[in-house]
Length: 239
Image 1 (cartoon, one colour):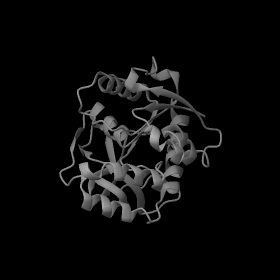
Image 2: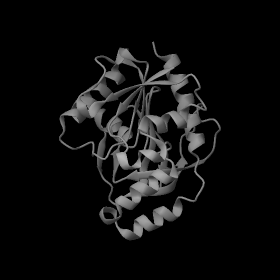
Image 3: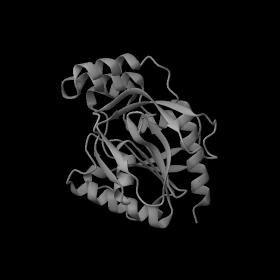
Image 4: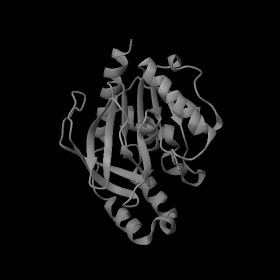
């Protein structure tokens, strides 16, 4: 299965030795569950967006250092493309920034998080179990790295998971679009590297607590299974 990777950022060059770029991270995350996986990468920051949603059956949108409400041409173009993907019924999975752009593009609201950054290993509680959530579990621990969050969902959305620090940790729009605030693709070493360079910006106390949390086992493989199952189910159902 070929997935279009809508790259909204990439790993700083000084950290690429940890686990490569974002495409490498998503490949490592999903390939155990989707051995047939291939990627076509689009650098949307440079205006590189598929001419039509019909170019691919599945779109995966990455995280970014930017905010979805930044007045940047490429973000506006990405939002328009997300609306086209929605209208054509293609499959879309958004991670962190991708999760937020999915919400904003379709009429939701994204703002700075009132409680500050969500960082380190944090838990989300499943409030709406879905058939593709196999193995099914009530909680899912993931790594987080976000200063913004979805405050209000767009129409036709279903809230799937909440977290103490984040009211919309996971949601879907219809049966073909999925947003996840956490970063199942991040290795702990990469999260730690980001935390250390953002220590002054985020604050020493929160960063130290987040780094200490990185020894906690995560459910990234469970999340990978959910994403793979969602993609297969929704892509198969696409007209």
